[in-house]
Image (cartoon, rainbow, N blue to C red; front, side):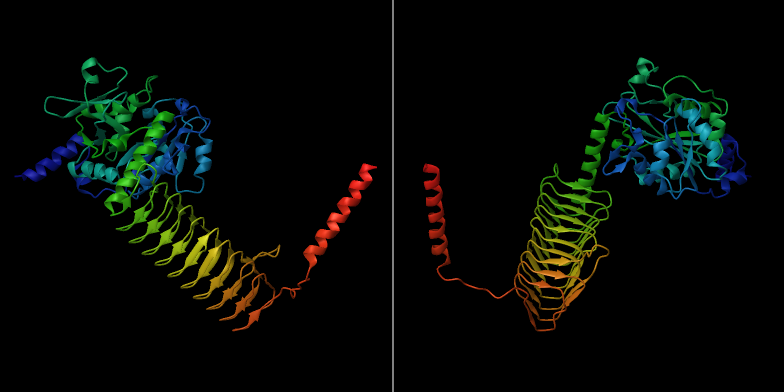
Length: 498
């Protein structure tokens, strides 16, 4: 006799139209179709809807990021009329573009994209390009649920506060999914259903072709033809289940500028919650911005109007003061930055203090206990431990040795009109205020550069470098000048009086 397990496996295979051997064989990597054909008329923009940005990246970038987390065998983006800017924006990436499609309707777009998708023995995911809050973990859960349950189709559902125009998930008395009712043509009873479809589908290998094959493109709302695949599979004996999203916000669809603004706020709140969960103190969550790839360790303190972007990492105990923007930078434990600073591509060492009003450009490295003060700019420069540059300086293409002091108004003149040149400053050097170091030049260990000097040649270790002329004092000059001016005025007044 067949075991209960084998009987169940056979029944699943029969329902899906596959043999028992096909069911037992491990599936390949998923294939992904992303629908990006909407012109976004409601956005009132010449820019395609999926190229608008949320949280620093386009809507399509966000969906692609979630999809790539599944390590798919192939990703096809189905374009519509006017989709050339989308193709151009993602040129060079491992994406296949299909389109523009010949007629409207999501089901027709998917059918058209299947040719570009190519063969594969893995499941097929269909995603919408305007759902930027969708997470990889949710897609992975959907794929696993379909595989584990032997489903022909697993669709993502959610329960928003207002179901609006989303398709309602209609179930029978036993709770089984029967169809997805289009909100615009649904009955009053169906419109009362709180569970709606997110427009995210995971089809078993071969199931999507069976579901879409007999359909005709219909001149109705874009969601209906693809949603009708649910009813088609159910009627043919296929197994269909709706998997509820843990967070209803993931299925938020951007249709208007208001939706875009609301999505930005949702994404902002999600990232702030991530920072709080990581152990950070966020003094004013409403004005603080934390990017998607930012990493934060415990006991970081973020003050109001801080913006963290790109591949930025803040270690334990870092404090970022108000009105500071940090991009693609690393801050080590105990560093304090701000207020009113900008860091891009910089590495800040332990216990450093940066600001106020400092700018660290790409290639800047501050080792431990460095102090960079107000109106100091650095670029492609290494400041070794204990360096101080506290006022009005520009340090570009330079290395400054440990415990050296850079005075106010110091400039490394690194560009000669053709190329950038390097300045090397040794340990324990004192560079006086308003000095210019004309690169390429080296200032030796322990040397002093007098205030106002223009250094064009190397300075030996322990030497004093001066370039200003000798000072001359003219005694009584002010009084003599005053008398001369008074005499000139008297002469001019007499002439005018005549």
